[in-house]
Amino acid sequence: MRERITSSQNKRVKQWRALTTKKGRKATQTYLLEGWHLVQEAIKARLPLTAIMGTEEQLTAHEGAFPAVPIYELTDSIAQTIGDTSTPQGIFATASMPNDDHVDPKQASGIWLFLDQVQDPGNIGTMVRTADAAGLTGVVLGRGSVSRFLPKVLRSMQGSQFHIQLVEGDLHDWITAFTERDLPVYGTNLDPQAKDYRDVPSLSQGAIVMGNEGNGMAPDLQRMTTQNLYIPIKGQAESLNVAIAAGIVMFRLAE
Amino acid sequence: MRERITSSQNKRVKQWRALTTKKGRKATQTYLLEGWHLVQEAIKARLPLTAIMGTEEQLTAHEGAFPAVPIYELTDSIAQTIGDTSTPQGIFATASMPNDDHVDPKQASGIWLFLDQVQDPGNIGTMVRTADAAGLTGVVLGRGSVSRFLPKVLRSMQGSQFHIQLVEGDLHDWITAFTERDLPVYGTNLDPQAKDYRDVPSLSQGAIVMGNEGNGMAPDLQRMTTQNLYIPIKGQAESLNVAIAAGIVMFRLAE
Image 1 (spheres, each protein chain N blue to C red):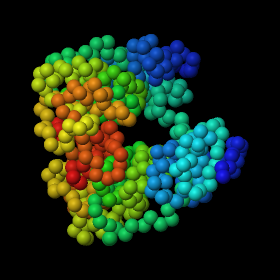
Image 2: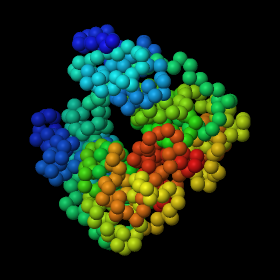
Image 3: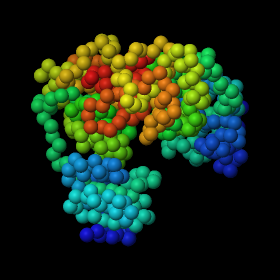
Image 4: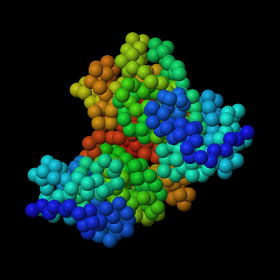
């Protein structure tokens, strides 16, 4: 059942290595899941996996949980060259890129997190994980945010991408679709009319927008929100990390 | 005034490179600050710098702000080899390791964050930055937490280490010193008697304890707290990142 791969020049091995790049993901229309936690979450979520590959030890430890997909056994030295962690666990899967993850913003319900041009993969992944924990319905990655298929984003999400809706979209469309239905959209940048985040009502439906690490939300999006919020800083720190700010606001407004 | 260094085998260059290791920091009793933001914050805080070094371009851009310490001009290629960022800005400083940063736990006032065996440098740095923003007095790194002099910890603190007190200590001593003075110490692990973090009074003085990323607080410390708290998780995420949890609790209880 298992195909054993021993040559580091094997064509599949080269394809798997290339999945850390956008070009490589596009070529095969798949992306890479690294480590048993993530592979297991993907299996539980019935994600369309296209292959599972790992060292003999890892495959043997987990094979009872595998779905009916091709399994490839790798030598330890080949396993070291896949993915982008310095010490990989030795188990991976590939999954089909969703060819249609479209959610109609005019139909979306619940509470959503909108991310405008967030750049750091760890920040994006942590915000998706936190949105899941706070009970949000989904996260929209606006244009200019890094790809949700980057290995580091996938790892920091810790499987939360399988629990909530995660879509790419134009935030102008999303904000308009919400405000036209009278669902509040809270931006999180300072402006002269911004309010303390503790002074607005909790959300039952609506959205919270977080902006770029250095520059915050784009000015044109700031003008489209229902209300912009700020978190009062008491000490001498200049700002909060964006994922920390998102956690504080989500746990306050989605409670 | 500036000494120009062109050999990558120069003895000082080797010492500066070694500052990413504990052994190297111990040998010279100094640690490394990378990037202008951090060097500038250190100058503002009148930290005992022992040298400033950088490329000609960086030194010329910032020399008006330098205190009276030896200045070393580095070639671009030497500057690339110092510190642990892949694309260094090209300006650094060395500072004396504090030989006595002792704060007596029995005298400490205000609100403190205690960190028990936190391992990730980015998490520690982000929590120090967030503690500063939330107006806390200081952070105690308990035994088993990673060093506050690691370059990645220093960078993630973003200068907040110069705004609040940051000490290493035995958390048994700190918790005892607070509870004996009837100052509340809130642990943040689940136990059968844990309370929702929203159901306890805000702190005017006291402490919040965060534990290890995987294992939480040590059981013996959990038994010493006034009360342990939990953050209710609504979705399917198994847990929150420790720095996110710390941010939510600090901004709720120190407000």
